[in-house]
Length: 229
Ligand SMILES: [Zn+2]
Image (cartoon, rainbow, N blue to C red):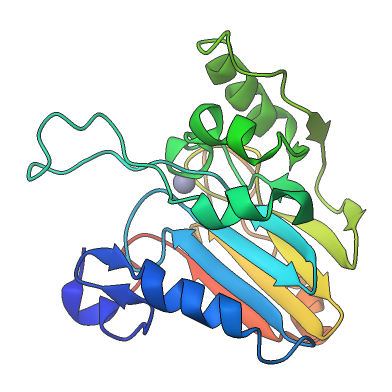
């Protein structure tokens, strides 16, 4: 983790996400016409990506990842996002978007989904295939509610519309998402690389990105390991 960078985020401390200040801000609920974006992991760190996007009493989630521990935490097999807020508010969850099949984006599903009401999952065929295969290692967990999407698909989840666009990454069949909220569009790029001649999938479609940008972007959430260097 990069401590210097984490200091830029008020809810983050040296130990990661600062639950106290987050829950306090949740309780205040200042302005009901705001979209709330809550990273449960993956911001300022590599791993356990999980982002809540809320509008009034509705919530969608992007990714449910886990993190593999570092040398300073011997005996720990994996680290998952803190979901206590979601457990209290699971009725709000309309669906979970899975961007791609890496474990830092889907790996916590067997540990978390049952605790938050087993909401429906939306992802590409390969992403859902990897997710399902892993779930079979956890026979006591409930059957997953899988919904396959393709590039260009648009799905409605309450007040949100989610549109999927192709991203090139080192696992195929990954997508970024445009999340249309009542106050503007949020772009979550998911993991990506700009590679003009990739071997595993088509390259980034820059015309498509331009078209998405032309609709207006309220917030860009960009995720690419090492991008800052
Ligand atoms: Zn990835």
